[in-house]
Length: 511
Image 1 (tube, rainbow, N blue to C red):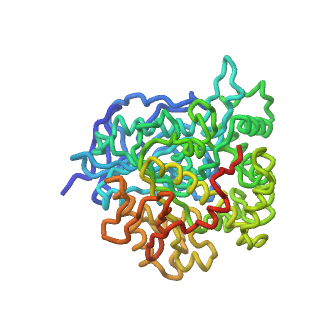
Image 2: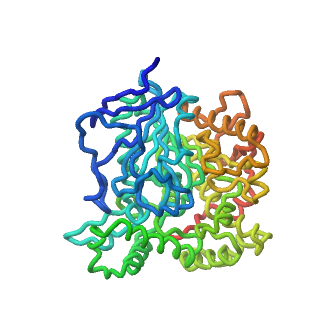
Image 3: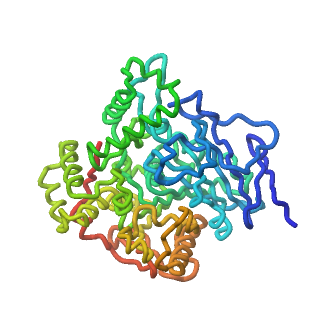
């Protein structure tokens, strides 16, 4: 009988892993020092530990509301000291490609130990090492308080991104001990995790830490300027009844109070200005030197292969959950465009009117959601892809598949519905209705193809299917080949061409 545990020695100490199917899992490994004493500051490397660290359980998750729509496992603890990662790997007898996952959640919620992100199936079927990470969220990770720094107190910007970089540095230094190849790292993520990736692809400090990238539904334009960030930070202090002169009190305030204030800010921000997030990466001219999409268009993204795409019906899940994070009705969409016109002095009103006129279903909900989808996800994907493909291999997809139940519920291929297909885990949301009207066999076949393409990309830098199914051509501006993922995959030339031409190449985003 093979051993059920496997202890690995890395740079910082020994870690005991446990058999999980045909592979081993090491959970809750600290990749940085405790952050309690460095609130709103960059993480430091972890201190070496004595003895053997037990990797049986996931580490604490970033502070967030337990009433989160994603559902939090009651066994999970919330703590500011949340900077840990998890590894799934075969017995370390060689150098395998590494896939590092950044979870989504609008920069305010989520955690690496969610059941849907379990890396066992990808690891077993793809002969890869899978890593999932926690990072600081909400006010503790993505609220830029640097405008309140003084000679005595320092608030740093983009702390959550700095955590992600620290995790990648740990992978560079330690993953070989777990059988991973530090020179063959694929960074993949969804939603704000994918937005983190498109941002990191323009961050000089992150260059060389990953060698391929997969960005699933990245809100690539949801990155804001320092002036706007300072305004949001000021509002955060107002919610807490703190004048700027007392901003230092944030360093000792309870995490519960910070989370409560964050929830107020998160709820009111997209209500006041639809289409905006309260907390997100900031162009601080330090870690993040330029707006990411603008950096892509200037040829400043890292020269690495990229898979990027979005889902056909992105906003439907926000309407279903009654979430304000995306505008899903005509009133909210019109308010978004009015605010965008006010925010951008270089954007003539007639240009916005042209775009709105291209959605004949307005003011119906279908037209509003189509416009919101294109503004928030599809056009940012195409702007990034077009720019990156000028110098690096790029592949674009659109995820169209939906089970009969999701179609009946008018969710379709909504935001995040591709996640179980990537990781191979269906039914992770408790009483999951996904297959109440059938479709499990087709979903399994779609999942198999998605996984084979993602895994081939991790191994070879090319997402060719391993079973001879439809060849996925690179995205180039002449053909704009796009893989449409459905019950039967197909490759089409510029399937969103009409919409793309209406929007043009001028990036429209709040700054």
